[in-house]
Image (cartoon, rainbow, N blue to C red; front, side, top):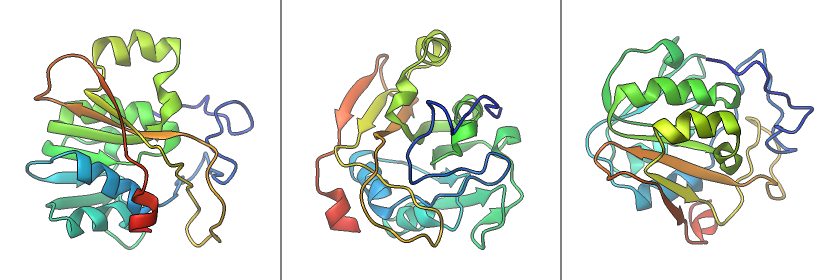
Length: 198
């Protein structure tokens, strides 16, 4: 489900450097170091499906680290299989790892939890933890197993944009682990990933 109330001119704008097209693809490749941080701290067994693969920024890192990756996207960006709408998907897999379009994050979560047999990981704004509606639905009924907070700010740039400066928004990896005990662990990535993998 797409969040039609998502408003970039209001309080939900994730960062001044990220200008999403609400009627379009919302395409901002994930920096390599952000994916490395997840893979260095979470063990994935079996296939990983990246359902919003874009130009392969995240999928390529997963492949380089030895993961078996299946890459799809709704849009054709020259990587993976195009024309796959994850919000309508029924394909079951071992793990799902992705940076979802911001106006579809809750829809990705609702469907992804049913499709991942082992782990489901979403790269989201840390502020995703906020909100009465999410508290009463997502976090009371299906809380994440772990929330990995970035100690370094991620800056998302449109494809081909000049890069410089640092982001203004805090991000985290939200991981739902089907084998974990109940409760949510709050963890922090150690500083240094940006320098090591950029």
